[in-house]
Image (tube, rainbow, N blue to C red):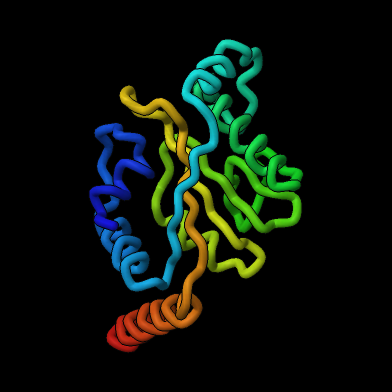
Length: 176
């Protein structure tokens, strides 16, 4: 998995300023088995457009496009197929993920999202999977859910990262 591939997952192909440092880190973590990555087709693109046409209210924390609301509906349906109930944009760890399963095992972010969300949400041991459901590309016939989960040594990696940041922080404050 290359950082460039991840860019298309998190940014749905939009020309935004990608967070290359995080994308590179995720790529490395996936390639080393510290984060597992799989993808799953969830529905035909036609279903997505049908849902857009049915959207009457754009629910959420602020204005949202009908396409984003349709993606959230697809994500809820996916979790329901797994036997899971879900909440839309609940408060969780100081954030508001698009979809959170009521048993806290899944988070699904829809459309464009920051790649650091995978690392952030997987730190909570209740979360087993973080899904990213991007807007479909013009040439795609199906929507794909990209699923990230903790692999071997994920906890050690996060602990090491935090320890490194603490060391830098402590050195900075000793100088001042």
